[in-house]
Amino acid sequence: MTRDETLNLLFEYTKSDSLRKHAFAVESAMRAYARKFGQSEEEWGITGLIHDFDYEMYPTAPDHPLKGSEILKAKGYSDEIRTAILGHASYTNVPRESLMAKALFACDELCGFITACTLVRPNKKIAELEVSSVKKKMKDKAFARNVRREDITSGAEELGIPLDDHIQFVIDAMKANAEALGL
Image 1 (cartoon, rainbow, N blue to C red):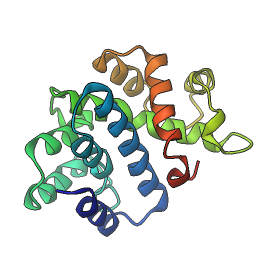
Image 2: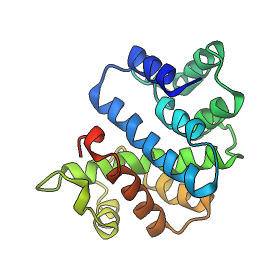
Image 3: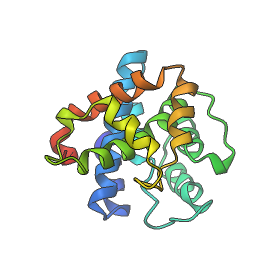
Image 4: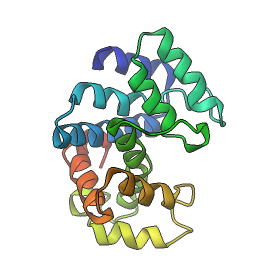
């Protein structure tokens, strides 16, 4: 599947601008990690782009991402992409064995959290966001309370990357695509 085909599928199922921007943020982080690890940017980017495409239609567990995985299977997406997407939701109990699956899990919640941290800044620009600001907000349980902090920390651990380095890496990946992300 190509990025254009995946983008069409995303737009067919996802109408919310914020969820589309989240997909673009995770795609940005996944492409950057693919470059870092010498993997396929196209495959990793597609995985990030499509990981939540079914969320508006099937917002409750375990429908998301199980029903989406069936749609992706019917459309010809690889088992590796589908397994990574299933693994990004811990409640599916699908193990994250591939590096791509670990990266998707590590980037998903963090991208959402970084977006939230950026949007509360006076200028709403990611260009000035620092790791220390993200970590400070992580301690505030009332801020972006639906973001599971333990997923952010365990995601970095699964990737084998120190948390501060992971946060900075994802900020930098999102900065490179700031205009599309509205940040």
